Image 1 (cartoon, rainbow, N blue to C red):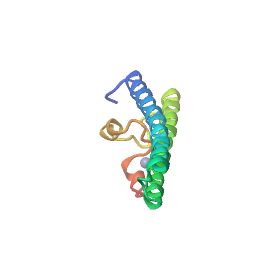
Image 2: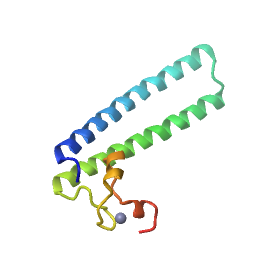
Image 3: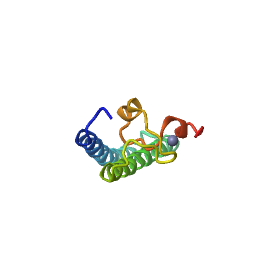
Image 4: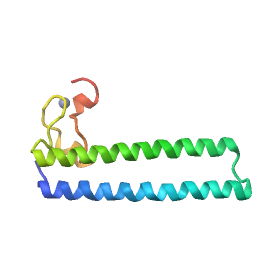
Length: 113
Ligand SMILES: [Zn+2]
């Protein structure tokens, strides 16, 4: 593996903090939208619903990523980090570099494994 565990841990924790900040920010943004809507009637109901659905999808994605990061931190502690959680093969370093929380090799992620 090209990175030390400490480097990976630092990256994971930084990403987790980033996500937590984004989640807080989007909560603020949501209440701002609601205020605008009731004050100015700027958004139509459809716009507001569409926007809300998008925000919820983003929030779910962020929470999912937080869970993936937590799981990766546990794998790091257990010495399982860098191995596919489905087939046990090495995960390609470039893949881990792109997303350090990734839990599966490319084959398994593509459903080929
Ligand atoms: Zn695999």
